[in-house]
Length: 183
Image 1 (cartoon, rainbow, N blue to C red):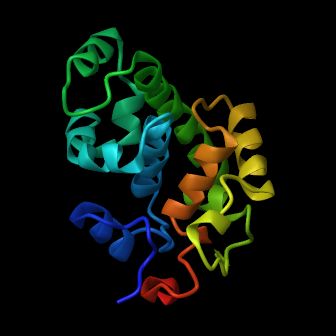
Image 2 (cartoon, rainbow, N blue to C red):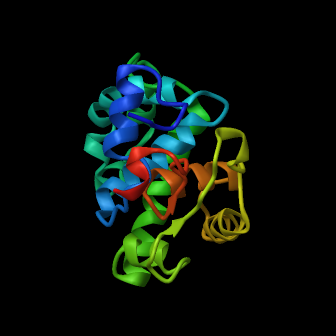
C-alpha cells in the first residue's frame, strides 16, 4: 500500500491513515490541533504525537473554556508535567489562544465557520508527487497566520498555520500516489 513517505512508524502511520488531511469540523478537535501544532514549533510532529495523550490530560481534553481560565497555578502545574513539552511560552500561548479561540466562536458562531471561510468550504486538494514538493507555507497559510495574529493569537506563524491546515483537512497534501489521498 502506498502512503506518504513521512509516515514510517506505527504512531505516524495511524495518524496519517486516519486523521491527516481529513476535513475536521468539530471545534474541540480544531482547538486541539491548533494547540498541538503550536507546541510543535522547533520540534518534530512525532515528538508531539507521542505526547498527545499527555496533552489531552494536562489541558482538560482541549476544552477551550477550561483552558482559557488557567492561571499561574495551572502554568506551574504544566511546567512540571513530563507528559507535555514544558515550555513556558508555549504553555502561556495555549492559554492565550484558548481565550482568542472563544472570541472567534463568539464572533462567527463556531471556529469551524471562521476557519473554513478562508477556502469557502471545499478543501484544497493538491497533487504533489513527492514530499520535497510540498511547501512549508502558502499564501493561504500567510493569510490565516496574519488574521490570527491580528486577533491576538501566538505561535501561529505561516508554517505552523500550514501544518494546521493540513492536519485538519482544509488542505489535503497526501501525495498523488497515496491511498489516503481520496479519503
